Image (cartoon, rainbow, N blue to C red; front, side, top):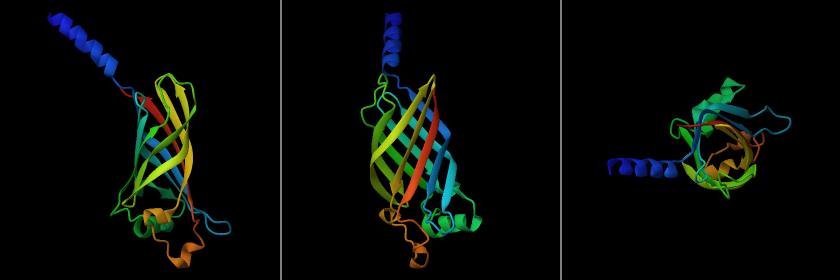
Length: 179
C-alpha cells in the first residue's frame, strides 16, 4: 500500500510539475534620443526573468540603478531626477504569452501584462515576443515603446526638446531550464 501511495504521489508530481526557465543576466536597453542632440541610451545587463512554460506566464525584475549610460552625469540625472531610483528602485513586468503551449511551434507570441515603473502600473499590450527554443534553453526577444508621462516621469521644459516623446525599449532574455 505504501508503494502504491508513493508511486501515485510521484506520478502526480510529474504530471503537475512546471517547466520554468530563468536568467539573472537578461538584457534591457532603452533609448530616448532625438536627432542633433546627445544620445540618450542605457543598458541593463542584470535583469532577472522567469518563464513558466506550462502556462505561459512571464515576469521580469530590473533594478533601475542597473542602467548604464555612456555619460556618468546623464546616469546620475536619470537616477536622481527622472526615475527617482532611491524611491522607486525596481521596474517589474508581469504578463502572459497569449496562445502559448509547450507543443506549439510558433516562434512569435503576443504578450500582455503590466509594467510597474516609477510607482505607476500600466497595462502593456501589442508587444510581440520572438522565441527561440533549444534544449533546456529558451530566448525571448522583443521591443516596445513607452511614454514617460504615462509613468509620471517629469521632463523639465528646458530639456524636453532633447528627449524623445516615446522611449524605445528592447529586451533579450536567454533563460535556462530550472530543476
